[in-house]
Amino acid sequence: MPEAVLTAGTIQYEDSGGDGPVLVLLHGVNMDATLWRNVVRELGPGFRCVRPTLPLGAHRTAMDRPELVTHQGVSAMVGEFLEALGLHDVTLVLNDWGGAQFLVADGPNERIGRVAMVACEAFDNFPPGAPGKAIAASARVPALLALAMQMQRFRWFRRAPGAWGWMSKRPVPDDVMDAWFAPARLDPAVRRDLRTFALSTPPASELKALPERLRSFDRPVLVVWATEDRMMPRDHGRRLADLFEHGRLVEIEDAYTLIPEDQPMRLAEELAAFASGGR
Image (spheres, rainbow, N blue to C red):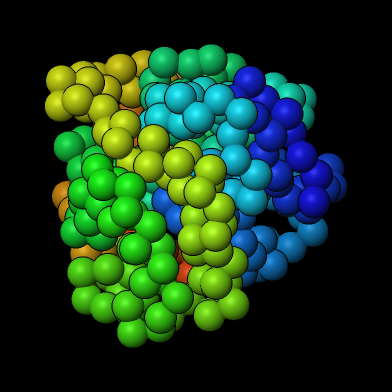
């Protein structure tokens, strides 16, 4: 798997290659680039899909500078990653983790041509819902975070209401989730990165100010929300779309937050049209 050396450390990524429109697909906490595997398959060879594994707990190599693993810090890593790969006119796609909004709002965002916000943190919903708040709470005590990662080995725990059972309507395959949770379960340094991130929730004043700064982004924005989402309030989708001069909302049924898992074909259809300059 190729790697990009950034200020904070080295991250791995997957790149489908090709000359088509470029999508950079971002994931949330305790996930990696495989979140997008089904969407990439549906998009096919007409698009170049670049999928970094961010240092959010499922990364295989701990960061050299763990103090940079914060919401704003990881957002800056995304911008540095685009520069390191020489990417331009990118369609930046968020799901679950919403921290990349700081890059969109504050820059440098010249390499970003379009943004798709797919059922992600927004407004005051950092961390999102009961699962996000549970990780943040356990991070205050290192032993509790380690225990939480150990518990992720069990299917009943993964699908429990109020936990990952609220993230996707359909179970994520066991082998995918095994790979997501193994790094933070087995490597204390990766768990350190996860803990640093989980404790970095921006203060309420910063979250309150962020939406007004987002308004300055004058390129197309697609907001995709799940009508049955239990993590991201439904009205946040409309509110996000209304922030932007060129914002548009699409709602997808029969899905929770992880729309790439629950409705990959439907999501790929919307992303393909959007990244190609269509609706």
